[in-house]
Image (tube, rainbow over all chains, first blue to last red):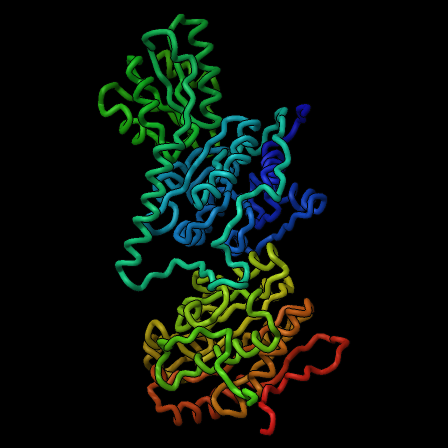
Length: 350
Length: 261
């Protein structure tokens, strides 16, 4: 299929359609509103249903209903909206339901700003809503990768019966790049869902529920979730090592999403001009975090520089990966300030 | 021999956890009878709320969800939009629907979701032990308005179906009561009609059912019935508030009395 030039948010909407999603529930918030706008217009052509909810709280509960009756469902939002969805996502995770949600991160906390940031890392990877649950979090660094990860996210959600978050930032959502779309999924080929609440015809009722008044049962559900998360940790870690294959590195940068892309440019520049060996490690799955892969690259480096569009939310995970074996520095800007390759190169030269 | 009365198929044969004197059991039965008579049990999905009827998913013999507090109309919206062939109902109390879930019910009604909402109003939070609800009557004593609801401080009780009646979107809106056999017969008619309109794909339908709560009102059942009649009914008038024009014969099963009665 030929490449098309598309804005990130619109490409995300089209990728969801390709993945077999025909139901979107969401609420406008900058900088991701082009997703609902795109789907509102595009869905009628493919028999999809678009509902503009009254709030993010309602939107995520609509996903709960849609996932519970066995359909592939999507919502997209941005940071303050994702906070509002925490309640519903906790219920969805507890009920073992598959959904895909996209966070096109904007600057926070509070109302923050509408420009790109990476300040929702801890929320996404460590604790969104209440209770013992996890989100599988994937972070694209290009529009093409956003398309590919959205397409895959629906399969992962169905495979593990769990919410999957694709976390981009305002840059991924707003920039235009050439993309190639995967094939349109045949809706008849999607996994069947015998647990779904689709009417108790010739069977006992299916109940979608997260209430366990007996402590043993509540305990058992949390451990059932944990077992699933352990399997995800085993099988779904993803990362990329860039320019890490020529012996000892002067600096290994660790960055994800848009920031990783900027770091690659900076690494190329410093390698070329300063003859220093600079590599970039890019986690693609933010949870599960690719600790072992990072540790393997870190062994080659004299020092590590973590670069984020936040005040350093991922640093703890890098520390856990290298366990004190290498010095770790951090460079970050947030609030919508996006470090340029020159800014990052200057830090590499310090 | 012809069977003229039996246990509804749409109820599971279980003992409920409801308090003595509570009318939730009666209202469950009216919903179940309506599903049975319309022949839709096997394509019905119910949404249980948070509150006294939180365990309703154990009592209805159809597919069920348990929703977060107040969110049942949003859950029902998602399910119905994804599967328009299903019959969706929510079963909610006054804390769930009229307080924390106000936005969800108003907007589901305004979008004209083809769902049926059973709203049980007993003027108090039951499950958490008798706190003030948006529908608590002026002067009524609860654990969080121990000196009686002061309208200067807590505002006036919300008449939910009247509020929804201000929306332009076509709907079936009714308020009934569950405190006497005669009222129960009228309640059944309204609930059945609400489901029938959904099954026919006509409109959003909602029935508010006035209910007693002897436990948290601190009254006997007889005293509770009297209090409901004297205090609640004048403020929450019974009747059909809105009915869409439907070109069809009257429902032959609307009064579900057995033959010979």
